[in-house]
Image 1 (tube, rainbow, N blue to C red):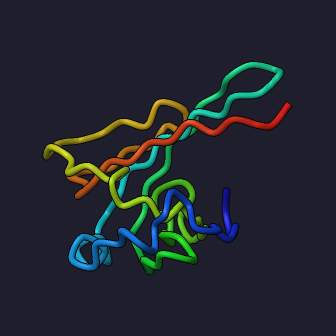
Image 2 (image 1 turned 90 degrees about the vertical axis):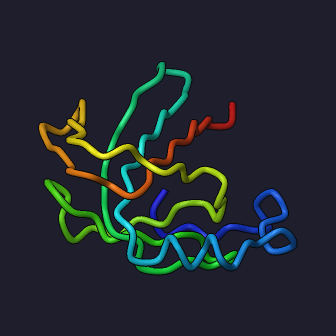
Length: 113
């Protein structure tokens, strides 16, 4: 999912909420991905700091924790980011945790058949 370009995902540029995008910049986000494929489903979680929010380029995170320093680009879908409740979030697949993230986001990714 990293470093991909997004071509008008869901009409992002036409409905772009500049205030919501500005709130995301600098925020800590916990991300959950479900990958669906012919071999079955698998899940991954990671967290990081939002570095850039752009309707055409996507939402760029610099990861923290066990994946510190990796750069990941997510789709430019602002509605996927929900405010997180305060607390300690244990990542199920990485023996890692994040404390008091600002937002949680999740996606299901399906591979073409």
